[in-house]
Image (cartoon, rainbow, N blue to C red):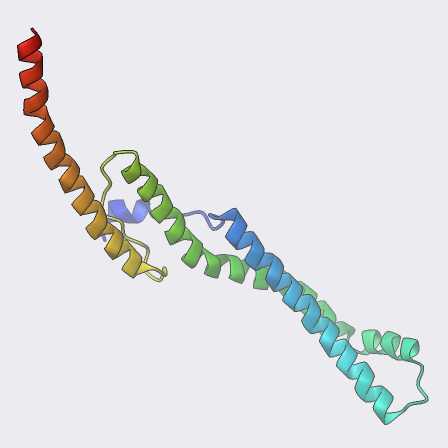
Length: 159
């Protein structure tokens, strides 16, 4: 990959709102349920060991006791979200580029060879698209060349 191609590589982290937002929201929801499961597990095991403890008092004590872990988890949550966003970019970015190139090809424009960044997923789809795009562009050019003499002959006959 030459320097010019490196400059044109995707720089946006957020490229497909629907897919990436869903993954982020699901990650946050999973984190929330994970935290609830830990708290519930602590409460259940404590009640099993000492049934005389009031549940609400136990929940409060658990929050106090585990507050450093909860705070650390809350602090790390943005890092987890950023990591999901970055990882989802490796999936959503190539599909976003593929959709753009497919739209250009469908609109009758020639497209350049599609290559994804190193580490992106779907590289085999890019290779398959390149074969298809090359075939379509070749057929379109051959069709245009066969139509050009016909158009020229009809204009001469009319003129």
